[in-house]
Image (cartoon, rainbow over all chains, first blue to last red; front, side, top):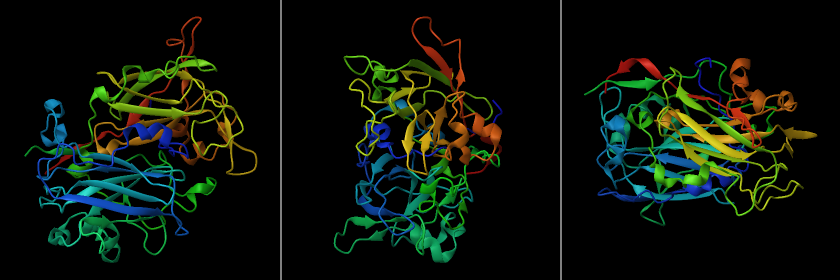
Amino acid sequence: MDGRTTPSQTVGPYFSIGFSWLERSDLTEGATGGARVSVRGRVLDGDGQPVPDAVLEIWQADAEGRYAHPEDGDDPAAGQEFFGFGRVSVNEQGEFHFTTIKPGRFVGPNGELQAPHLEVSVFMRGLLRRLVTRIYFPGEPANERDEVLGLVPAERRDTLVAQRSEAEPEMLVWDVHLQGDQETVFFDY
Amino acid sequence: MKPMLGYRRPAPGTQPEYLHPPYVSSLKRAPKQRLILLPDTLSEMTGPSFRKNIVEPKAFDLTRQSRGEPLGERIVVSGRVVDEDGRPVRDSLIEIWQANAAGRYLHKSDQHDAPLDPHFTGVGQTFTDGEGHYRFVTIRPGAYPWRNHHNAWRPQHIHFSLFGPAFATRLVTQMYFPGDPLLEFDPIFNSVPDEAARKRLISKFDWVTTTPEISLGFRFDILLRGRDATPMER
């Protein structure tokens, strides 16, 4: 082995047979606090057409801004607690939906608290590597000073911030635009 | 607070670009805007650590998921998952999925005119052990046609999904077989610019796991991202 990361390859068109056993659209299990939020949205391709074969993975901290991970001082063997992982597939119309709690804040590399956010991986046929993006929360003053949002050109930041649904007060809406005028900000990792 | 080590970025050419025109599906799905370089924060340096009991003990053996035996050539696929510094990736979830021996997936969208096998789902999971080793027993998948270009056929492959210790180390890839004549023509395999990196997607025939009278063995070692040398303050 030459000491370099194995190349990524696409999940292809049939990944759902391998992924569906771990589908998890309710992340609230084990949460001891935090505001419950639902997020829905669509995945759209370069023609603005819905993508019927995508899957999103979510990773997030609990309401106190702690991750269920040894890196954050956690012992995963400790028992039932908020886990923070979700896996949600889109339907034939490219729509997805999940329910979770709003994560708390924690310190970023620059020593400032990061704004509450969810980490998102996007997989589908046509993507040779996963896409990485984030979902931030609307009306959050901390967004103004978030280190990662600050790296994004101002005119594109809105693509990372979910919007409140006017019809459903507890619902946030966040779409993934793979291309086009509203292309979602994706991160290089 | 203790300093944290971020994850090393991939060496140039060892990962595919999102836009790879010979792979037609990438045209409408690859992002066109500049990607924003993401610093590793706690969000990227943590990740789900699944408990081993979420996986059925027999889920590593795709030949014993049914009362009958699947058709095809039985194989053992095994290897070791390590990071770029050779450290084992311990107790980590691996998911695989694949076509059956006739080149057909158990998926409603797969319309290839080849038989399904009532005794084969093509789906398995396991965890690496304390040294990063894993092992699956399965059936050698068939090649199958796709519509990327005229007379397009995917080489035989098994899809692998790995989590590793962090969000940053998540990897989905495909394992190929040595000597497959279709590799040369496959736009997905050839999307990896660096030849040495590309060849590491090809498993090796392995006498060590080849069992007399039972099955051939193939070895597929996987490297996940390693950690930076310099700690960052948090």
